[in-house]
Image (tube, rainbow, N blue to C red; front, top):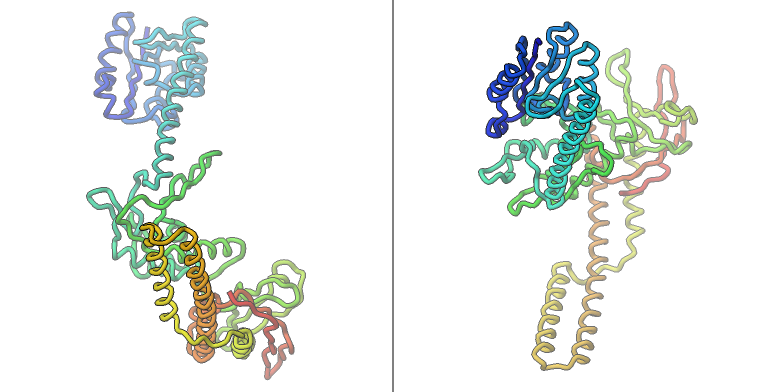
Length: 480
């Protein structure tokens, strides 16, 4: 009888376990000889898992040769050398049966010559699959436990970090500056535009490849840069969710502050729900709103026949949803209205600041709060040493705590006044420097200060030989 033999090992470890390719060949030849079979073909897959059969060239060639009827029986050393999934086993057995080829294991009582043999081999294959899935589940549980403890589960070091000799992440200073560049630029740029910048500057990824918008987005969404460990982001299995915890590494240094990382995540979420283009910077896009329908205005441009560029804003309610008739508005019209509005905003802030000037500095407040803290400590020591009674301790502590509360309230008011003064100063600086600022700088300033600006047309644009832009009023505005 013509015999074909099939051998497989998945790891070097199996050599030590006695199932190396050479060892399998020796035993298979001895078994075939004892049965009086003639080995006509040999198949082998080295260093390949039995997880599936599609990516195993040896077994695929064997299945092709079955159709050519090049042998009568297929001989393997053990069943798990051939398959580990019931589905794969059934497919192979059905294929062999179709072309009247038998199957035999040299070390196990499995064959396809009897109905009982077919049933038994199916049961054993099911057990092999169950064992493999149990091992996989055990590995997953171990990795999950490590992740929940803030430990990394291997993998290459992320861009911006390297591993030291102890396997800990340390900052790669050259790469870290580009991480900061990416996070800073995303405030006014899209990921695609940032990728173009990085490639223009000759920056390469960790693998030495050019940057893509996907690579930039991966960096922006990776919490490792603010000191958090992420695991299982890509596993689409129910009940196996992404895990994010503080990284368990004492000497770890973040590249990006947590508040900046969270700000960028919010920005990513906002942009995911609306179109965002960053090749050209439009300061009022996403902030300006239509007074008629409430939808956002987005920036665009057209090239003039006479040369140059006409920059304008259009209402999404009209051009995307067809529910508004607001005409396009020249950017210069909104610029003018915005500059005029800055004075109004400063006045509103002054009117809203109804707090009396405080005759105490923040520095002095801090000193007094520290003294109160010291008084509390001394009072506690007196009580512990038995120098004062419990009732006396409580009365004194209540008086000190009341003084502390009053000082903290003063501090909150002082902070609020200082914040208002800071915003007023920024508004004045934006107004003074507006015509000297780049579109990108204007956009960053507006998006940092304002939540929304509601735009209405007071007077339509005048076309013709001597055109005039529309007169715009910023009807409402809100600070962030």
